[in-house]
Amino acid sequence: MATAAIAEKSGKVVIRNVGLMLSGDIDRPILDADTVVVEDGLIAAVGREKDCDTGAAARVVDAKGTALAPGLIDSHVHPVFGDWTPRQNQLGWIESCLHGGVTTMVSAGEVHLPGRPKDVVGVKALAITAQRAFDGMRAAGVGGGVKVLAGAPVLEKGMVESDFAEMAAAGVKLLGEIGLGSVKAGDEAARMVAWARRHGIQSTIHTGGPSIPGSGLIDEHVVLEADADVIGHINGGHTSLSYKAVCTLCEKSSRAMEIVHNGNERIAILTARHAIELKCPHRVILGTDAPAGSGVQPLGILRLIALISSMADIPAEICFGFATGNTARMRGLSQGLVEPGRPADFVFLDRAQHTAGRDLLESVRLGDIPGVGMVMIDGIVRCQRSRNTPPAVEVPAIVA
Image (cartoon, rainbow, N blue to C red; front, side, top):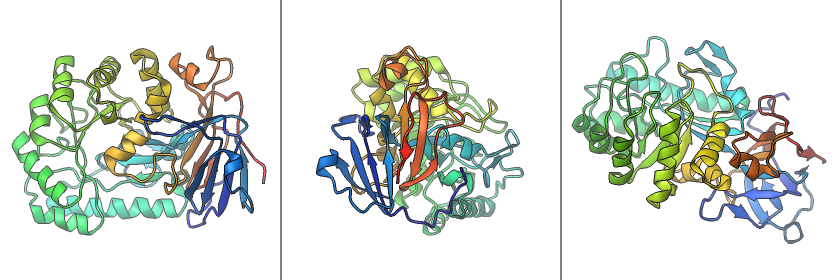
């Protein structure tokens, strides 16, 4: 379907006949509700239809008994500019991920930009430009309306605290992966992380072996000393630390543990299990680390949910929470939870046709990727039946 400009408001939207309401909150993953009411892009009510004000709606969506979940959040992407990646010279990758249920992407640095500047002035200029450009791109309806949170500078030697203050004042809220630039030592990174944190900028650190020329090994000792807010691709991107080293990070750090699609699958499964054993599942968040040498994965988050649920033996509804509410809370985002006052970013799902699973959650527990029937961002339908997922048994319908 054509992408509408983001300037429009959704008005009042009523979503009824939801068969399974996934909240995004791993403490209460399934809600006793079948109806959501949206007002101008925000969730106004969640509950049973008889208890909600469903009158005078500008749009009515019949979920046809399918599941509704918060739109998926990809915690680790590497955009450049627009809906294009030079990593694989691919157009339309962001909009393609929309068809995988992703409504928000968080940049871990615009590192694939050809000729990326590495001097301090250039680093700041690129971060501010990327932040502005992706805000503007979404406003123009490019990329399917996906919320790309970009402008994540890679740390380079010579940066001082005033540089972070300047970027923060200009709207920069993220740091790119520590270790992809010239700053690789734990003590130097820790100093810059502290400056960033003081000015409201969140940090992520590369974990594991080098992923691109110019990056290097970042081991558990550097990760612990740097104390970044997010332990980026704890399962490697692509090359992982040993399981013993990963356990050390799980046990000695209190920061977010980011598992990515483009990492070591064995360590991904073991990390998720270890988080459950340590009783710290709230720290687990999911990303793809795409685009990368292995390409773009439009279904990467859904595939990771199915992988972790089926192989780590974690309920599917909890794994959906890893990719939504956990990421929202760890990254300070308003979206990612189905509750009043939050942005109306939703993905409608059903079991894939001919799966062995009897329902959505069982099919995911068996390792199957579900079918996406509709994606909504800020209460506006951005795609209907996905062109990328297996076809869902049932899909929602716009009835008014």
